[in-house]
Amino acid sequence: MKTKSFLYIKLRVYLKVLVDNMEETKEFKIKKRVTPLHIVLTAIMAGVLGILILYAAITTTIVPGVAALYPATAFEVVFGIWFGVWGGIAAYIGLIIAGSYAGWFPLPLGIVLAVSDFLAAFIPAAFFRIFKANPELKNLKDWIVYIIAGIFLSSIPGSLYYNLINLYIGWIPSWEAFWLGVISWNLGNYIVVAVIGTPILKIVTPFVKRTGLYVEKWFA
Amino acid sequence: MVTKKSFLFYLPENSPFLSINAISKLLILFTVSFLALSILDFKINFIIFLITVLLLFIAKVPLKNLKLWLYGFAFMLIFLTTMYTLLSKIPGEHVYIIFPWGTFITENTFPRALSIAFRIWSMIFAALIFLSTTSDMDIILALRELKFPYTFCFLVSLSLRAISMFSEDWKSILDAYWSRGIDINKGNIIKRLRNYVSITIPLIIITLNKIKEVDYAAESRGFKIGIKNRTTLETIKWSIGDYIIIFFSIIIFVSALIIFIFK
Image (cartoon, rainbow over all chains, first blue to last red; front, top):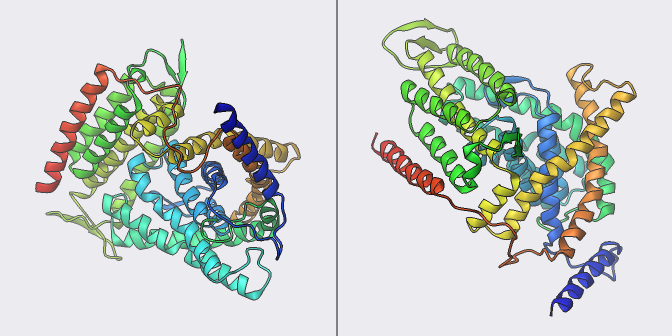
């Protein structure tokens, strides 16, 4: 029984390697579904985002608890566009790990605050999938979707949510400071996503597609 | 001195917190956080803060490792006080200064700023106690004991490990740039941001290549989504200390909840 299950697993892995290396054609459509690869992808991307959040930082703070320039947001947007909902989950876990590790916020609060980073990745992911835009940014439609959703819309809901929680717990003292935080957050993110996100999308997307890791739909 | 590696750093093996399991420590973390969040009073927040500092000492967390956190605490205290001075509207009997943009300073401004600082830092120190006395394996065992799905435990476990897996790659890429005489922290902000592009592209490429290897390894070990009844070699251990902590944590949590509801 044990031998049979071992052989079965081995066969599954061989088949997986074979299917991964197959080119999708008109005659041969690979049925896409959620596989362990997506879990591995999410976990590793969360770890990488954790590293980028921790180390790739230009710490410029305007209101407490909010970094005005947060380069990691560019990677969250890019990962959201490439990996759909999985990119959003990776951003969520990545911020919890990095924030707890660096002492930016306590773990229970991090679980609530990290939703902002999920939104930063999920909004561009949703727009790219709804409008069927190409992350390689080949035509005008792709650019418009990227500029609207990737650069501008991605940070607005997250900034409102994050600063509202901070206002509620007293980390931000007043509505004046709240709006200062929201504006600096958004302006910083526009710069970061435009400067970092755009070249990464243009350069690395063909490679991501070639490896077969690109998530075309929401989950697969 | 014999040491044991936790999620954050090495801890002396005689630390009493090492004999407590991760679930009890997680309960301490959540109780302290809830208590700190439910009460906003300078004296009480300060007492909660002192208790967490005391717990840090009991846990025998080496002070030299806390340098970064202590700098963070000092920075946050100054920053928060400045913010409250310039941008708060805390009501009080005496208004000392009214700023042109509508905010003002009263006798309650600074106590409120300090209360918030102690509230946040008691939560951060509680999290620090948890992370500095618990290894990533303990966290996974605790999640499994709490009946979280195996896929979720796997996701958390691999994320924690990915940090150490790829931080080495990140450092190698940085070293490669340094050895070529490129200083990534030079120039204006836009230039520095653009430098990150050239560093992160190799990291992303390395990561994408490794993802498939890890996936094949996981699948060849029988990992699949929704898998149930997996057994583990290690299991979580319960001691009298754990039961005492759980008992007191529940009492404190319920008391804080009652205060929060009826205040």
